[in-house]
Length: 352
Ligand code: NAD
Ligand code: TYD
Image (cartoon, rainbow, N blue to C red; front, side, top):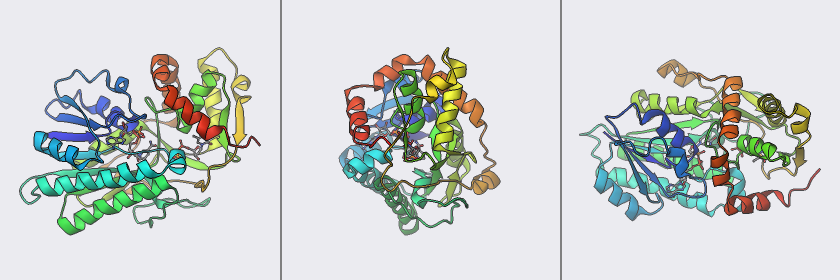
């Protein structure tokens, strides 16, 4: 069986490949990645020499490239992790989000439609999506699979569009699809533009820890390997045409989370908690900042028996240790492009 893993050099895709590629030697994994700023070949150092791994530098936004890869490998499964994934970048410049997230998904669907005869072969188009498509919750309630879509950032609107296309191909052409919508992930190999690795790596460099607004927005955090295990389960046993929500049942206000990271850093280094907490800096809010995300994972738990293995205490400690133990990885991503982004995103945020 040949599995296309698009975006396999990014955060979640590389954790997925690291977790499953060494054990499933009967599967051929083809990582199709454009290698944007968010990708890092170091993420796959441990698996890249294995026989069942192939890397193809290509963009899903270019139909010709996608088509020739389908001819070359004849995939049975496509797992579409590839995306522009950062909300703040989508606010500064939405164009790439439209090209990769919408047109890229469309190109993959078109290739599946062209090459797969779903009446003859068991195939699967697996689209990785986000809970952000559901919009913003108030203090109560959870996103279920029945919650209406209400995306509010260019990122979430582009993901919502791609989800709609995937479902349209199921209903119209009978393409065998499945979609999962997951909450915020954290763990090793996450690019330090996202809150948790940004806070850890800035703290280690004794730089400000920027908290948007009053820090009261809430996110539901899930350890990345728990997400990857859910993806594997859905790939093997998910019902065709279905959607599954995946969440951590682990809601944190941003400010409480940043304080917790400071406490963990103090336990793992020679500095005390106050040293890190003094770096916390409230900065101007994100435009259209969604207040709260929280997932109801009842369906995947009941149908497929999935539940997270990691607690937030164990997962966050592992994550802090990983960033402490991998300074070469951190230095490899804190390039000129990264410094430009940090300058662009934070320089004009008013310090309150
Ligand atoms: P990431 O930004 O870390 O990685 C994205 C990867 O996609 C990179 O390797 C990049 O090079 C690649 N890519 C980008 N454009 C491409 C293109 N045109 N063609 C081929 N490859 C391209 O993202 P991530 O955090 O690993 O997220 C993976 C998926 O999971 C995304 O679809 C995202 O929407 C979804 N998701 C992420 C989270 C999260 O918390 N990170 C939560 C829920 C869902
Ligand atoms: P992020 O990691 O960008 O994920 P998402 O926007 O997809 O949820 O942000 C998580 C939360 O942290 C979100 O409420 C925005 C907030 N945040 C900050 O307060 N400061 C920061 O520097 C960043 C990047 C995010």
